[in-house]
Amino acid sequence: MAVSERTGSPRREVGEVLLEARGVTFGYGRTPVLDDVTLSLRAGEFVALVGPNGSGKSTLLKVLLGSLSPWSGSVRLLGESPGHVDRARVGYVPQRPTLESEVPATVEEIVLAGRLSRRGWWRPLRREDREFVRHALESVGLDELRRTPLNELSGGQQQRAFIARAFATEPDLLLLDEPIAGVDAESQRRFRDSLAHLIAEHGAGVLLVSHELSAVAPDLDRVVVLKQRVIFDGPPAELAASGVSLGVHREDLPLWLEGLR
Amino acid sequence: MPWPLPYPFELAFMQRALIAGVVVGVFAPMIGTFVVQKRMSLIGDGIGHLAFAGVGAGLVAGVWPVWGALAFAVVGALGIEWLRARRAASGDLALALFFYSGIAGGVVLAGLGGGLNASLLPYLFGQATTVNGEEIAVIVGLGTAIVVTMLVLRRVLFAVVTDEDWSRVAGLPVGALNTVLAISIAVSVVAAMRIVGVLLIAAMMVLPVASGQALARSFRGTMWWSVGVGVASVVAGLAVSRIWGLAPGGTIVLIAAGCFAIVTLLRRGAAFRLRAGGAEL
Image 1 (cartoon, rainbow over the protein chains, first blue to last red):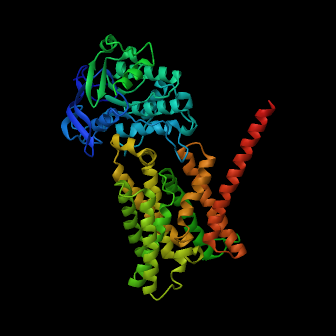
Image 2: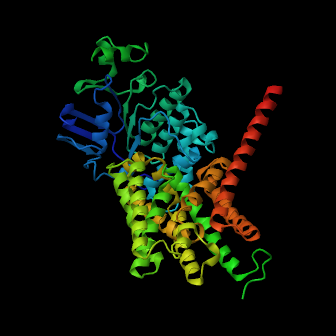
Image 3: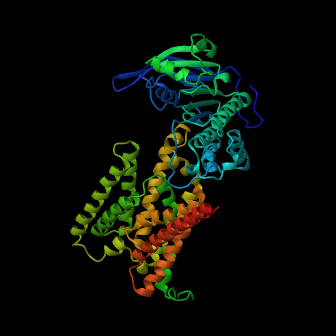
């Protein structure tokens, strides 16, 4: 296994399985939300997870991250159980329109937090950490706003700051929960570029939960449609062949998904 | 032998109050920045009431009240954090539970000790001008421990108090850090109680931060502005209380509140001028 000069960590072979869920079943109380869900993601892959509202997408993400334990089935992240995986290698962008900070906090301060899990929270930050933060901010187009308080940013800009925080950990696997919901076109373009950069330059695997795939459709390797169970898992072209357009008609996918209810 | 300082700090008792007060003016707003960001502004109040019960217990047991207060405050802070983290009670409700138990316990214990006697008052309302050498040593020692803890852990504590869910997923030791913060708050309360009193401790954690966040545009900046406002309030409060014969604890807090009012008015004025200027263009 080759060693990356930049980080000193082993570089992953392209195609290695980063995430694997087998027969995952989960529910709240007695109500099942996920039924026998099987899903995998390899290094260098860009996969979208879609489904109608209430189909269990966010719940599945929580199970994958180990925040919820499945009733049955198993989850492996980077070959480990979620409780034992090196968290610095798993980036996560939570579903949240905005973060209301009581005390002003700059974009840079938020993104620096991402470095803590990568280099050990007890170690002082070095110049190279600030370089990574700058690089992460550049990749989402927020470099010029790094000293701006988060509360003064638009929803789209804030979301890009959270994506930069996830990038700053140099993740091997990135999980994003509805990161571009209600985000302006410019932010969507930046978002697409930065994900493409992460996959191409770092060989990371990306799982994107979203209703709006139009911005990223050309880059997707697979689309997984969830409605309690996986009802489709394949290339976007196959989904398009069944009459669903992901790219041309923006309203197409949400309408089709709602039709699945 | 007092140092050659000008009036109103020329006497030894005022100089002792100044040393202890300035230390409180540094650490209380510093930890307060994290407490405000965590949206637990009133935790200092809740723990202050528990410390009051600890003072009562100390007086009844014949132990130095500061140790009683420290024991009650630390156990209470851990209890509040335990309830909050397990979502057994909301942050507010957990606080209320300990808040009222603390004050009730304090009243009962003080009754056992022979009624609400004079030895409780310096802890309840603070009497900076009567702190002795031993108390200054405790305040400076505990205060230094808090400042060092906050400075060493500032980045990771910032991450946790700003976005606890993300921090947990990112593998940061959220539980341990919340525990460290809870213990630090308890220690702060005990270290500050002889200066501003258990009833006003939360004010010294929160009011300077209210000014600091209006003056700064970053978390780091807020912390240092808050410390500046905290120290200035203590120095001005002690001076004013000596000159006009006022209660020092209350005067310090009123000046901290006054700072917030002035900062807010100045900011509004600046925003108004900016808008008026923009309208002319």
